[in-house]
Every structure is written in structure tokens, then in C-alpha cells.
Amino acid sequence: MKSKKILFSMMVMVFLVLLVPAFISADDNVVSDLLPWKGNNETYINLFNTESGDSFFEEVANYADGYDAEMVYNYFAKMYETSFSTMKIVDAETVIFDDEIEAKYQYIGNFNTVWGEYSISWYIFRTENNEAIKAGYKHLIMMPYHGDGDGMKHCHMRYGNQNFDFLTTDLSVVDWWPTLFKTYQVDKEEVVQGMMKQVKMYSSMLPPLEK
Image 1 (spheres, helix red, strand yellow):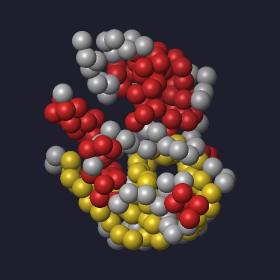
Image 2: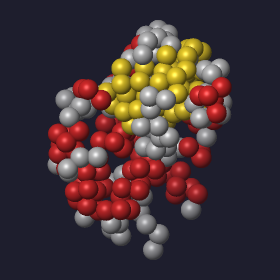
Image 3: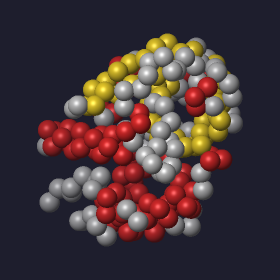
Image 4: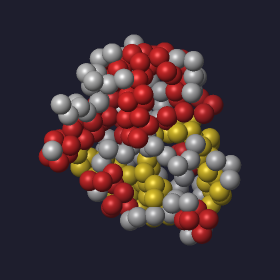
């Protein structure tokens, strides 16, 4: 069972990599602060707070044996889960979570991981702010914003108080893919309508249910 879970997780990661090839082999010299993510960043699951959100999960469930709309939503919500709704990056160092917690972050380096034939670069930031650490935000580990063709620009990330190697490689977080988009660059309803045309593809991300 454990080996099947690891295999499926690898399949999901490859699926994500193929959809967004721009983040592979990122230039290590590009990032030295938080400016590439400056602006109001919103968590991916918020995309579905739209008129078509519920319909999307219903349509995906139609192609996923044993799933209903709620189960599909729960899977995506868990994969993209964050404890914040918005993450505003004000300048090169300043981050505000949900308009409540403000902290300064310093860039501490780049960490590369390998998934199959793909090399993935993570950019690591750390704060010493006690309020942010108490909320679980000591480390922010970011991938650059990217998109596939005309698709929505977005970025993947991880965060937590654990060491960055744990947050990027530990098997307990292998299915966890917090993802952000720029609030003022995205028409949520339009994006979900576009996703509705690919529900069969999204259904392939769901793990098969145990019989």
C-alpha cells in the first residue's frame, strides 16, 4: 500500500511538471529576495469560490470511479491546503498573511530536488518574527511564478517551521502542493470555466479508491 502511494505521488508530481515546464532548471542567479512574488498572492483553492466551482468538482467526479463532488473537493483542498488565504508580499523582505501577521524574511539560499528526470529549484526564505513562527511560517520555500502557454500564472510553495529539507523531500508532505496566484491578474470564474473543459484530465490526478 505504501509503495502504491509513493508511486501515485510521483505520478502527480510528473503531471504537475509536465503542465508547468517553466519552473524546471530555474536560474539560480535570478532570485535573491521576495520581489519576484511581490503583490497580493492568493491560495489556489480560492479559485473555486465562484459560480462554477461546485460544478467543476461534480464534473470531475463523473470521470472518477467511486468519487462524488465532495470527495473530489476534499482531495484538491488537501493537496493545495494552506493555513492562510492571502499572502501579500509588500517589498523585498516584507510578507503579510491574511492582513494580520506581518514579518520580514531573508533569503537564505536555493535547494534543488530531483523528481525522475526533472530538477526542481526551491528558493528558501526565513524569518525570526515570533508571531510568524508561532503561526507556522518560519520558512517560506518558493518556486518562481510560471504558466503553460496562455494558462494562469501561478507558483508552488511550501512553508513551515521544519527544516527546508524536510519541507521539500519528506514523504509525509509529498502530496502537499500549496499553490498561489496573483489576485488582480486572475478572473476566477474564467479560469474555472477553462478547467471545466479538462475535467477528464483533472480526474486522472485522483488516486484510485480501495475496493
